[in-house]
Image 1: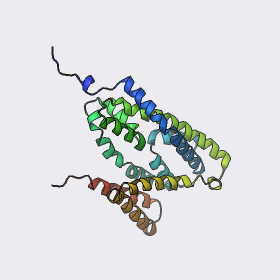
Image 2: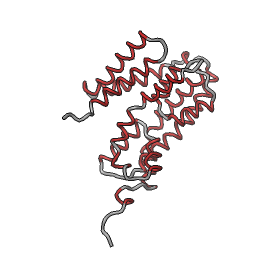
Image 3: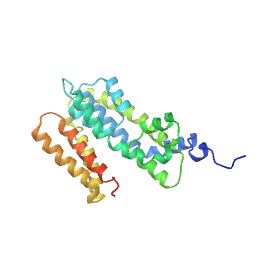
Image 4: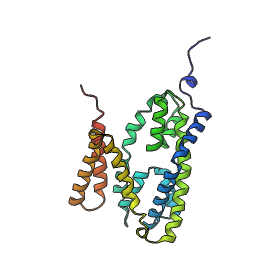
Length: 239
């Protein structure tokens, strides 16, 4: 009889881990509800139906990318610009997912990729904290992510319904939440120090420059892509 630990012991994916993640995600509920509500209001003003807004929130499941895409929304829809903006905004998840490789590398694809679908900035930070504390149950991520998803989508629908009654969101300043969201991220970067803030500075400079030179929503994609490239290069090992 071998004393070698099996995969389930080394790389657990359990109901207990899921519940621990779901409980940890409760702290995020107020912020998610407010932000999802704001997205729902803004999506209604852009002409999306309730079903379209819910599908958008549930499938894309990325607040920053969703808000940036709404900024580019127009009639006719600039589909390529929206897709590229979403891809550029979400490029950071490639690096974020890589930091959790020790949890997911040995798991079946349906568990690893299914869990990573629910990864966002907030629950990634929670999962990273769990990992650094030596806890190895990878179901923690899907626990936090799924609990967040079940707040995010209903909050979007509630906001959409409210938006239909509200009319112009500028009357209550709800449209400002998009700018407030990115401003909050910017403060976090600058507090972390100059090197961490560099991708943000580069992204802003590129976005402003492109916005002045080229019409349309391309400035968002250009800024997000430039910032992502600079951020990625900071993690390239030097020989």
